[in-house]
Amino acid sequence: MSMEASIIVCTYNRAESLRETIDALRAQHADPSRSWEVIVVDNNSTDHTREVVEEARAGWPRLRYEFEDKQGLSHARNHGISSASGSVLLFTDDDVLPEPEWLEITLAGLDEFQADACGGYIAPIWEAPPPAWLTERFYGFLAVRTDHSDNHMITEPSQAPFGANMAFRNTVFDRVGGFDIRRGRQGNVLAGGEDIELFERILTAGLRAVFLGQSRVHHKVEAYRCTKRYLRRWRYQSSRNLAVTKGFMGNRRILNIPLYLFPKLARATVRAVTGQITLPADEAFFREMLVCHFLGTMEGLYSDRNKDG
Image (cartoon, rainbow, N blue to C red; front, side):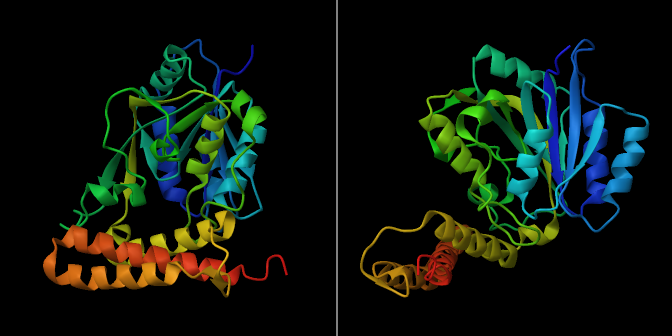
């Protein structure tokens, strides 16, 4: 019998949180006749991650352990893809608790919409109540997706799901390739965009993608991630990574930075400063994040200035 589904969990130094994710996957209300597996890809963890997986595997043979020594979430995800046997590959993270019907709802949704890829609802589990300024406009930086609870087709890369809850038919990766190893988180360096970039290729190839509102997981959000310091760092490092991997248009440059970015940074800085005085807290911080975006972008372009030299 061929394997119907592989659930891939990439992990880095979150052994105890991973234990809870495994418990949630073990509790899936899957069709008894369905063949499925869970693959944990350990991306160079230095804690007791392997022991947690081996302990769980002793009483649950559908669980597998894989090790990826190339640091980076995209490396780990690609390892999971190459190791999986399922016709459908579902991805979640080591700080996520899928609901008991997650597997079945996701597989049924892919079939119902004849889709090649999908994503779903991601609810937050707040370690501490979020500050007042942290409104829903910032949820994307925390990999939380609560803006839609309906089913709808994904037609633009901006609608791309987050890695905590997404699934693909295995054949998708034969068509468009795996995750871009230049993008995504690497150890403690924050970066993103690898999910969006993959969905860009999926849509460009004419494949179908759907958002499933009832395919639901719960994502732990630690208190330190609900701070301005963390979000500034996330925006800066992510923009730096995107500048290196994607680049920016513009022929007139100084130190590889297009000249038009300098007045953009100046205007954004003025708007951020005035916003601290005149705007609600969430809008004021959103403007500050834009300054972090330009600074990260410019640093990334500067650091990449000798790439072709």
